[in-house]
Length: 228
Ligand SMILES: C[S@@+](CC[C@H](N)C(=O)[O-])C[C@H]1O[C@@H](n2cnc3c(N)ncnc32)[C@H](O)[C@@H]1O
Image (cartoon, rainbow, N blue to C red):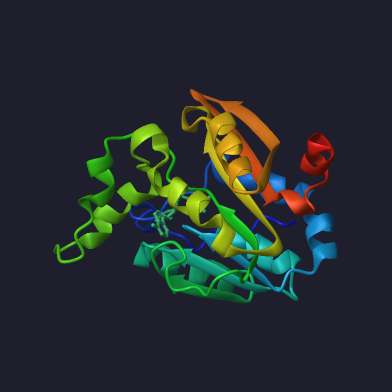
């Protein structure tokens, strides 16, 4: 997959929108490694929650031209930057300013991508966003990284809803760090009928990053054979 051009994004934009970093590129690497699997599945709908600059979903939309790709972000400025990234790179994207997948019908997402706010913070930091404030953009950047207790507050909402998000043979790629307790996440998801596999991991300054791929146990070869 080609890394999209990002030269149109200004330093002013990056005051308010998450700047792609090692986590973004690790997730991109994981998707690239699975590209032929994804292409063979011919997904109808691919959705990234929290597209930020749009670097990931733009690359995916270019690599899967037959798939309807959606970019969702709670931060309106991230939606604007994602729209510009798609246009700059000639990608066909549907960009929606929305909280997680609140406006989506159930069980329509074939491929879900999420690099969530994963940093451990006090829970109150997450809900500090005040849409009536004079400059809501300032508070929105907090939503890029503030993850609450264990860094799990936002991602757990997605894990809890996974069964109603994914199609029968859908796949989710979620980035987490060690502090989010990846083994606990995988064990919890197994009780909900999902097989989680760490498909890639990387240690960077002070952080151990993982990408976990989730599939329904009924569709995941590794989990099926482990159960037998
Ligand atoms: C770590 S950044 C990832 C940005 C981009 N995907 C990347 O990898 O570079 C997390 C993104 O999630 C968005 N976000 C946080 N909470 C959200 C929510 N409840 N609904 C939708 N997007 C959310 C943030 O605005 C931010 O753009």
